Length: 92
Image (spheres, helix red, strand yellow):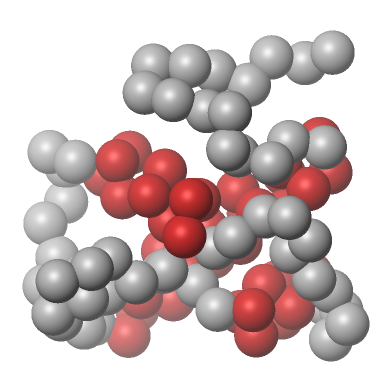
């Protein structure tokens, strides 16, 4: 059983309001992991076999959180690959 991204490229394009937006070197999997980790121990929600929420409102909310994380990393020039547990993105 794997963990599917909580957002799609289509979600990201809708979030940015740009049908041509790309995630570049970023993937949707890493920010999905960040969002899941942030929720550990807080609000439980039902998921399918790929750990994607089954409730449409929960799914949309988490997809928006992932898109916001991707947008932030993209604007900050961060790839998300250097982040490890306990690390923080520091402004330059």
